[in-house]
Image (tube, rainbow, N blue to C red; front, side, top):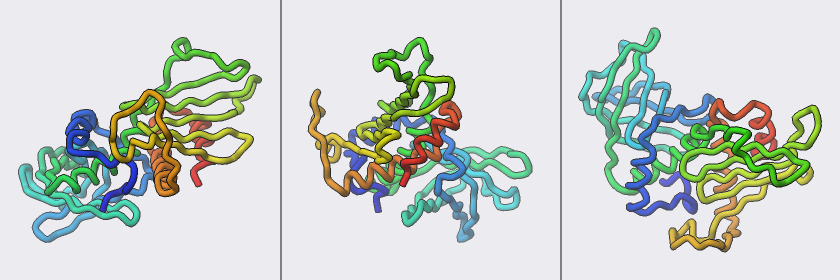
Length: 249
């Protein structure tokens, strides 16, 4: 079952391009509710996920549960109510502290399973890719507010505005998660979400998109926002994280 029903409804061409972009390894945040088990010859071993990419996963295992390199294995992923079983092959083993690192190359049985896995990666890749834009490259065009910007892969963009004064008081934020937008200000206490109407059908993008206001789409964008926050990179300061977390309901 897909992680998202309405958003990230990729076609095969989009998935092929996405796999190339997701060759980087991303480390899920500690609070991100993704779990994994490694299945070898009928045995199922719980594993800690150290990193994920578009075609592989890095697991931390006890040394006495290790498979051999080139062994065919399966990886069972659980993400809340969602579960996925993926075929794989062990491509790398190495000691890791008192345990062992096991790198598994993944092989998807069909296009739906491949798409589902890439949907699962979206909140991890978006959050982990965000890095601060140097202050001298940020246009300050909304005085007296001070703008801070964090840019990530594939159009991910987080902008926060701070009020003037000696203390860091946040006024509002906009968080563009690829084609989807979340925004809120301190006064309203409400998270607003937007999605281009064509984003769920992947029709051609227009320069002035019409926004889809379907309740189902908005609920999925809010869920994407909540799942992205635990994966924010170390480049996003703690007070920015805390400000965003107020709206993760």
